[in-house]
Each structure stands twice: as C-alpha cells, then as structure tokens.
Picture (cartoon, protein in one colour):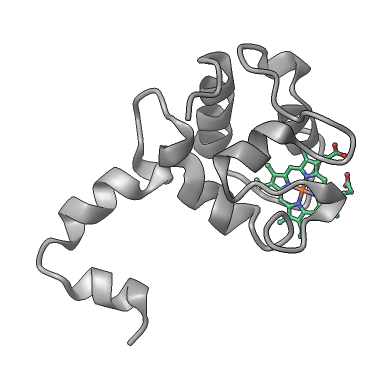
Length: 112
Ligand code: HEC
C-alpha cells in the first residue's frame, strides 16, 4: 500500500486532502499551497536534476529561477517567464484552474 492509498483509506482523508490539493484550492495561494502542484507537474524535470537549472520543488530555488535568471517576477505575471512558457506549449499540461492559481500567486507577489 503506498502513501496515497493509505491517505485515501484514512477516515479523515477528506479533511487532510481538501486543504493540500491545489486543484481544489479557491483562495489566494502561497507557495506552500502550490508546492504539491509544482512537485507533481514540474518536479520530474525541475527537481533534483533540473532542466535549465530551474528547480521548482522548493520556494527559494523557485524564486532564484533558472540559469537564465528569474522566471517569476512577483506582482507581474505578464513579465514572468514561467507564465510565458506555460502558455506557449510547455511539456507540462496544466488545467485552466491550475494556471489561474499560478497567475494569482504571482500577481499577489509570489508569497512563500
Ligand atoms: C517533461 C519535462 C518538463 C516538465 C514536466 C516541465 N518542464 Fe519546464 N522545462 C523543461 C525543459 C527541458 C526546459 C528547458 C528547455 C525549454 O526552455 O523548453 C524547461 C524550461 C522551463 C522554463 C524556462 C527556464 C528558462 O529560463 O529558460 C520554465 C519557466 C519552466 N520550464 C517551467 C516549468 C513549470 C512551471 C513546470 C510545471 C508546471 C514545468 N516547467 C514542467 C522540461 C520540463
């Protein structure tokens, strides 16, 4: 039984999942709330052996950016390479809602 299965069979699984699953989140997200999304959707290529030197699995590295520099410009999604890349056919396939959450996070100043 893996961790996810165990979580699903726990009596309080609803409670614990509703708050950590970014796809169910409706407020103003912080990095901490988005981290499972980054890990799941980006971590395979932007984790321990990061493509373009961009590691997205922790806050500090996400803010530092890639070998080309910052990919998040806090307060300005239009200037953020992360959004530019994700809206021009990057290998990651995010849902509209997930993309919206990332845009909202950057608009709010990319809080930790
Ligand atoms: C299947 C592998 C893969 C996945 C998954 C992936 N990426 Fe990437 N990403 C790459 C590769 C390879 C590059 C470098 C080449 C390029 O720019 O396409 C890159 C480049 C980038 C860059 C540009 C870095 C720069 O400054 O050149 C950003 C921003 C980025 N990815 C964000 C993301 C985000 C956010 C996610 C998850 C939602 C994600 N990527 C998921 C492979 C991946």
